[in-house]
Length: 185
Length: 207
Image 1 (cartoon, chains in turn cyan, brown):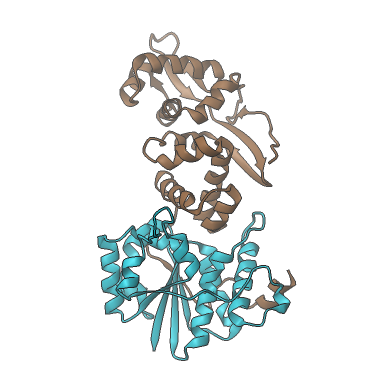
Image 2: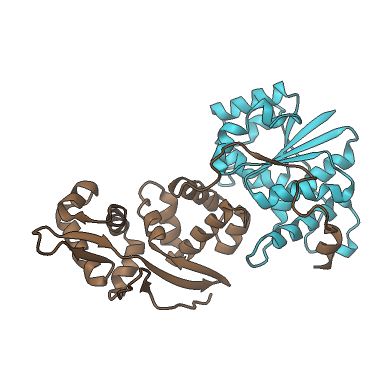
């Protein structure tokens, strides 16, 4: 059974730019846990420094080149599409996560499409792989709840969602074999 | 943007009156003034010479600021007759509504601004986007610590870049000691997720 770990931006921000000991610990933990780190392309772009030519991603590029970080191809959904017209489960999941996050918040409605991409990527990995489990990692409680709550709507229950609070604890608690393994903490 | 302000008022049991609005405003924009007020507030009762020792500000400036804070009603001079003046900070609260969100300007916000030299993101937001925006995102980061909002939602509501908000989140969590005491991550599963018995698909698509 393959375990994929989907990771949010703030976790990489906490770990810092490459190279550093935290990212090296993560690389070793990923190898030992026989897993991979996945990020949606929107999160890859969020962490990219576009002020350089060519743009570089100081958090992810080394891990991508070493093939233990995988950047997913763009997700299919469009936020402007009416939900009723959407048939792709990945896109549906992203719409649901967007609405879920607005329902969880007591503040004015916002565009949560990038937050929702974590949920959509989880559903896509389930759609494309039969023997797979997914663990998500984020420092936003609403996103963490969405990651555990929405994939079961599509029949996928092999998901765990880890929530780091305060966010800076991810620096120590995320790059471990335990956090990356299905049976770990 | 709309502002729905009440009067600035002291928040103690026996409210006095803040008479110097310019000094009150400066408290939010002048890091040294914020540091002095915060030092008094944390000490409860403190003398001028003690303050000169504690804050890294010239003696002349400390006494000038003490005079202005006292005139504005933000601190009270006590100990009259003992030969040594002591100072106590007055609490206050200013409530605003910005972008449909209630925002409070309190001594805690001044405490955060007093850390502007240590965390450049504080001055960057305050100076580039204004004190009210800073107060807004300050409150929203506190809401983030209890799970009421995501970091990207803070960016949208504060009209700030995600990177700036990530920096602010890191700073405020440290200054205000926000977050859980237990540093271990919480793991949610489909069984434990919020409202797992509800028909989420129907509920959300109805919206």
